[in-house]
Length: 313
Image (spheres, rainbow, N blue to C red):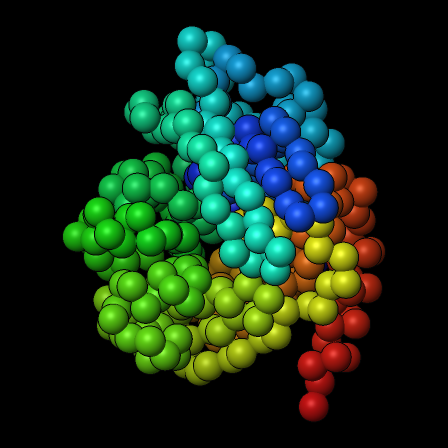
């Protein structure tokens, strides 16, 4: 899927300091955040630009970890010396699906969003990581040449900023959300029915994430259901959804296609979801980016082939 001239890709989101408890282990003050996982995953397919803010407490080692991936442009990472980095703590239940939030320290997220560098203005693919929909919408003016825009959201924004979210949906091509969020947004319990309802709100396609049960793509031109990759070792599910999005958008960028119609076509998005699924299956095998740091594109392509053979009928 690689192409010598990938379409420029940018992600807006968070850099975080996570503390994660699982039934088997605990990891304190590790690198996290939606933009972190997304950018790392997308970098296996080509260059990716990152827009996020962090405080002066962000460890130098975290920046070095991001630099390890080689293709992440950190010109949009804004370090605010007198502020605190977003921090989150969570505890997973025995099934490694349900979790409870132990603490959330918003830090820089309570301040003005980061400034998008002028050099990022020509970005063709834009992924709006999970944050207030009003902030997501404000970023769009920084990317006047965007060809495909996909947004992520969550139950919090559906509950407290639904009107802003509805405006955002009229201005994006795709939306990613989980099964419960799709029901909350639409009042429709069936995920396909809910996604069809969301299409009427503006997007061209909706990706409903179902965790260990895979995902459903509802597109104006078709429907696809993909199972999750049967990963045997699940250490930390944190960041799986963001890695999924990074793999999806990174692989779309790598096609080299530059028109909105082709980038967001049913066939292109469906294939991209396979790469997203496979990328996320590696992320959960360790804490933070530890597994992705050791990953190669060859590893991804091998698992892609295994997955394709597994689902072939």
